[in-house]
Image (cartoon, rainbow, N blue to C red; front, side, top):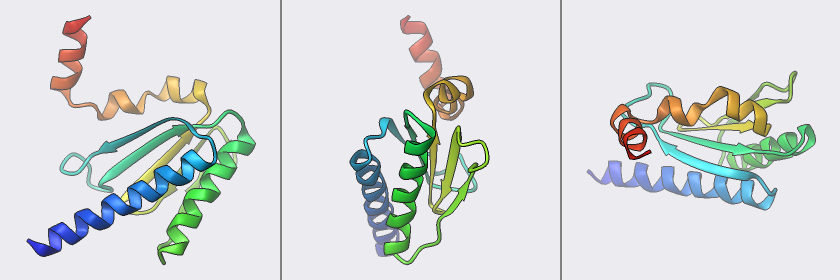
Length: 124
């Protein structure tokens, strides 16, 4: 049980550091999604918008720096198109979008549980 507590604390600390780094670089619409038990490749997804390609690159570098200061690898994908960057920190995967790309991809909708989506739809 202590191991689970330590793992949760480490996951929370990493997530907080990532969100803080994104905030420092003026990311917009930051969303953290806990996908444990629903996803086989990560525990948390962090989504954020940048206004320009240059800002997306700065956001990705800031997240990468968080990982490297913790002795973790950070793989950045999507640098060719610079519309949607993915930074893989293993237990946390960060998606950085230009706003129109995020709107088209709709990852929040994909990872929302069916019951939560049905409740939101029925309230409308």
